[in-house]
Length: 223
Image 1: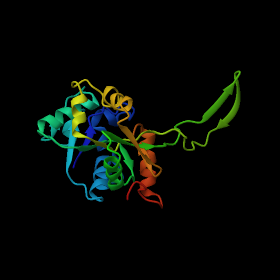
Image 2: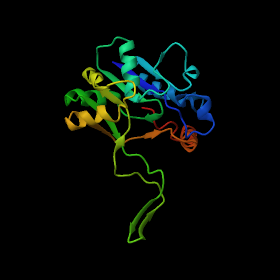
Image 3: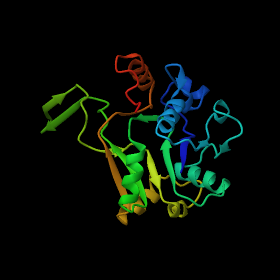
C-alpha cells in the first residue's frame, strides 16, 4: 500500500524559515521532519511513498509530483493518485506531524471494520492555559498544558480507493466535504491513539521537537 504524504503547506506560522523552505524540510535534530515521518513508516515495513508537493517544492526534490501551489489537501491527493494511474487503497498523512502510532494495527483496524476512511484520533496537549468562566468570574484555571479530553484528527489515514471519487476538484480540502460525507454515512472511523503525537505548526513546536530529540527519552515518536 502506498503512503501519500501531504507536503504542500505554506508554514506561515514558522516565521522566516517558513518562507525559505517547505515545512516538511524543517529540521528536527540533524534531519528534516519529513525523514522522521518516513523512518516511522519504514521501521514498520511500509516503504512506498508519494510526496504531494506545493510551497517551496524545489527544497524537497524536483522530479516528484507537483500538486499545485494553492491546491487543497484533497486536490493534492487526487492529482497525485490520477498522475500515478492508481486503482488501489492508500494511506495518507501530513508532512508536519510525528507519532508512534502502530501502522499495522491501524491497517488491521481499518479492514476489520470495513471502513471507507480511517483516521488516527489523538489527544494533543492544550496549546494554552485553560480557563472556565462563569458570570465573568474565573472558576477554574489551569496553565499546565495537560492533555485535553477531546480527540482531534492526527492524520495517519487509511483510505479506500473508492473515496478518491469524492474529491471534486483541486480546490477541495480533504478535511471538509469528503470527510464530512463519510462521517454522515458512518463510514469514517477513528483509530484512537493514546501514545505520542505532535504537529509542527510554529517556531515553538520546532524548538519543542528538538528538545525531545535531545532528551533522555530521545525521539518519543519512534516505534
